[in-house]
Image 1 (cartoon, rainbow, N blue to C red):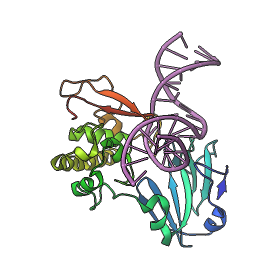
Image 2 (tube, rainbow, N blue to C red; image 1 turned 180 degrees about the vertical axis):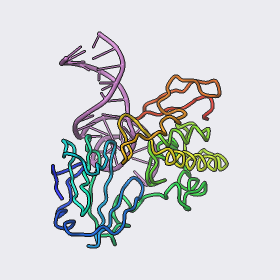
Image 3 (cartoon, rainbow, N blue to C red; image 1 turned 45 degrees about the vertical axis):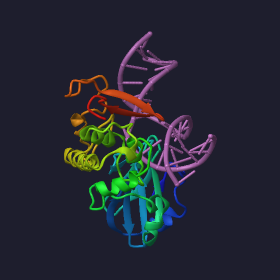
Length: 244
DNA sequence: CGTGTGCCCTGACAGC
DNA sequence: TGCTGTCAGGGCACAC
């Protein structure tokens, strides 16, 4: 294991090398936008790819942004992250549930605990825009900017709408739309924006299926035009005519 | 507590 | 061919 700098979003954990060297990987999994690698030493390596991170498998050479490199028996894995918005943490597996970023995490959107009932409870009395709450990982875990825009479009809900004012039938539609968007994206191999690639190097083709994201000024099926707005530096794309 | 803003950082791209 | 400005899949600290 080699570190090529001292930190990403935050410093790499102390003792990373000693705790990983010689360990055997027992399980690979995911929670929200974090990847989890369990070892037989009782530790879990938690990584987040941020906006620009990727794992490079057996790279021909170690590049400028290959910050963290793991050698396994068969492969070399390089965590490459130009913007360094990603993170690496090492936590005892038994303490994962108490890990700060996981403790308050909402349900997985494709799991059994995500429902209109859950959203109704999370949105109750909230005046914040529904888009902001869907991006809040404590409400639902793992949705990002693109998929939230797409799901709100599919369910006909304006991103600016106060979350607590959405009726139950429309929350049902929203839950369905979120699942549909995620399943379609997974099926297509992810979303390509600029340079995202799948582990095999192929691009993710879900971008071609975006209905509103990145389509400012283009016509919606309803005859309206897709608009873009920016809130605290992040873009929202939506059709004001069919999203209310 | 809930809400909204701005920053972390680099690279790609458009326009001049 | 540079240069400059804008924008980007996320998360979190901070102010009110």
